[in-house]
Image (cartoon, rainbow, N blue to C red):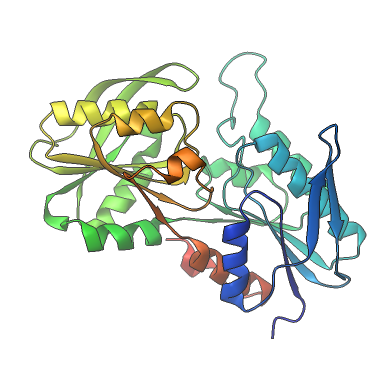
Length: 314
């Protein structure tokens, strides 16, 4: 039934791509992604894609520049091979944090990346938990921005008692996400007021809301160096929280993130597999990984059949 579908993946997250293909009952497309000795990316598509509906599954996760180039070159390869439609499935959108001018003469790199992806020949983008909703407007092609909320909610409902939970937004920008999440759990809301001293450096200043005697879950879209979430956990415990956990969609976990998590007050860090964990993160006992392959598979199926995907946006 999916005879005109082809799914390809670069080297960024082959495990997730294989699972999506398996869920759809199709085989992962034959593509050879290698590098020349000087570091240039080389792509060979080893099967016919003429007239096909092609899905390229590639999170632009670390190393971001390499995975982004793999996505662009695979797109160009299938476009020049006469694919009918190309959908870029980008579970994690790199450069998303550079979505606005924060200083004079600063670039808006998220917009630049959107332009490059579109120019390469992508006809549609399927993303998950974009760091800023306005990134959808950076594209002049359709963009479906899914949320990992159903997967995270299901785990929390099964493993946490709902009657004593507070959902905490680590900054004011995530309040809407935390409020919607808490509403589905019947949980109250708290907000962390922080001031960022520089890139990847945050200092917790104040907690807005009641957390004393509560089980606290910090909710964010991504965790990079874990500085914010670890400082937030410490501040929440000092304010009388019974325990503190955290959950996020994208576990970037770069630099000193794992050391910070292992030495922190965090009981558990719940993440999804939009980004594959590096070796050190994979051995951390406090990290629980949930799969979003089912959600992405259903979205890919609906896009292929030109069905509505709106019911997945919760």
